[in-house]
Image (cartoon, rainbow, N blue to C red; front, side, top):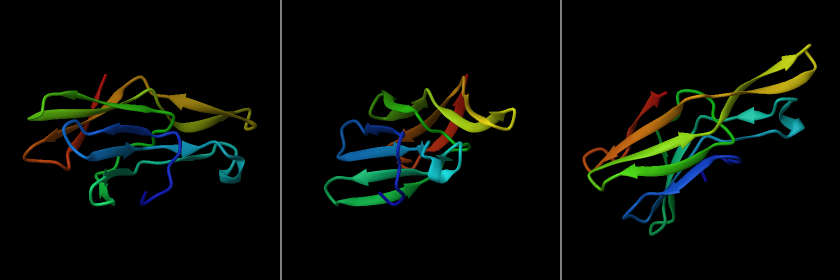
Length: 120
């Protein structure tokens, strides 16, 4: 990967030799009490053994899952079930803020890099 990831969304692009990895992070204390969060998105081409950066997420997302929906002409890569920023209770206990929405990258034959949108 271009950037080390953990707890990320990942899925194989249907009918292709590519994989998309989105978001991620760590809860390791070396990254402070709340850990790290990422917005980066990367596509891996298996045949070329090459990683390419894509448009990043609009907000931090970690602990998430990814899947594809749609057909060959208009695919969507969904990222759901994540936590983003963290807060502390009494300035001591770190607590994750969980999202109630999903983000969707629309991928078409004309636009393989996609653009993100939020959904409820």
